[in-house]
Image 1 (cartoon, helix red, strand yellow):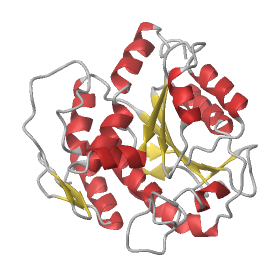
Image 2 (cartoon, rainbow, N blue to C red):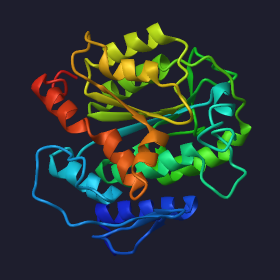
Image 3 (spheres, rainbow, N blue to C red):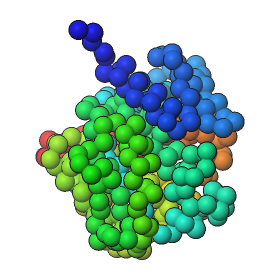
Image 4 (spheres, one colour):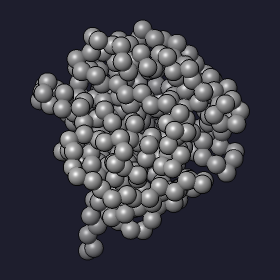
Length: 301
């Protein structure tokens, strides 16, 4: 029987993500190029090793995932959360040509689809089993009181299926609100406790949090577990609350929250926009993982 390496399986899943989203990934397993619209991400020469993610050494998503793996972070569980609050309808006035951030009617990827592809390309090679719990929040049913699984039964198998499920289910979902990250973060804690593994929770949202105190308490509680939270803000903002979550919660056991302004990061890095988003999202992971190891949060599970 032909044996397929985990690396080649992951590469195949990343190619599928690219084909389904208009992103082109080259066939070369050791050097990939990614393009969306006018921009072409190509590999640059890798420089000497460092202990952290350098802000100027990566031009492709594969560069970033390889360097995270080199740092010893080679066993990661992934959790994905998607914002279905009604503010998504108006948060694309400046950054998405006035369309809803969940618009699926154009030939171009919406911001949520872009983030799924970017994070899938970068993180999926590090995920042991490829199973990704994926949740929606803020719709008209759960409002700010809970979350719902985007896939009706079981977890998504890789980011390719996350994208498939997002494309299939989003037109059926009625946008609602208010916005509260707390139920999603509490569910991520339960996943970490059950799987006894370091996890990264990726939240994609338009930033309009209304249940601020609940979310703050959840972020602080999450810092007692081996869990990193990456919040990628799509749309126009403002992002004051997200920046406060990132920088001003001194009660945390360790700094477990990273915020990325999706549009601003892409605009500032037009040559390699996707790599820039991934780099910004994952730049804090090495230090967070070091803190988790030092605090022995994994052994306490």
